[in-house]
Length: 214
Image (cartoon, rainbow, N blue to C red; front, side, top):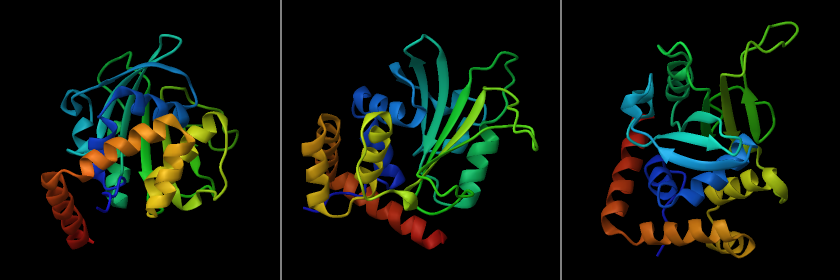
């Protein structure tokens, strides 16, 4: 049985909500900060949350230092989706908003490429690059920039997840599972999802919908 494409937005969401340890490990790799807890949030309760659609993730992240971060994460399929997510997530009617991080996993270059796997965009002064504040950041994971070599530490977490999402060779996925316990957990859940006939049908429909929209 072929495994489902873990980077198809529908499968991406279903996989990552299977257990909190998956989201914690992935987001620690992206945010480069230790995480104490993650809680899924109803996107409709957030300013601009509707732009996540039904396949994006809204997450209340409690960092190890007790601070909270509002994370919106998805696999955008078009440049318009990417732009709407970024600019729709910026700003809040709350005078003391929770810091927000937008995370986008990109199959294609929908935002300007820095030539790196992981780019972090923030608001800053044009000439001096003096940051305006630390309340909003955009993380673009450009999978076309994935290095073929492995890594260790926090950056290694991000690279392992990137390799997991782009792997099409079943042997590469099995090798990742043997390399890291979290990857083994992710692959076990992906295999379970792939064995669900109804989810396979929905995934086929989602692929057809995206292909028709191109």
